[in-house]
Image (cartoon, rainbow, N blue to C red; front, top):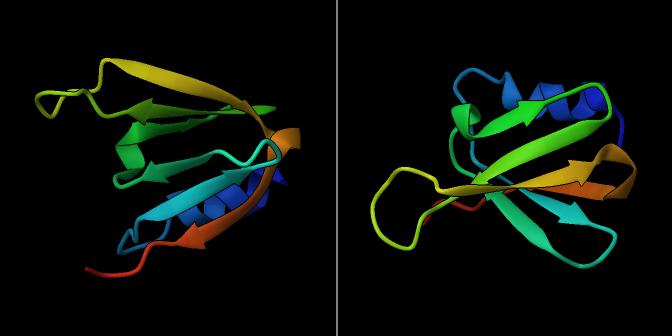
Length: 75
């Protein structure tokens, strides 16, 4: 996926949560723009901790393996 397309989702005002889809079938939720870091060729997404609000790990995704982004539906 192109970097500019991902940046559009991260910089929207107001921010709307979205799901990143990968070529391997994994999905990653981005509920807050501060929990994803867009690099030149990669997207790092913080993963929620089992307990508490502070993330304790992250996934490092190559932009080449991001196949799409879907906006999350309001609950």
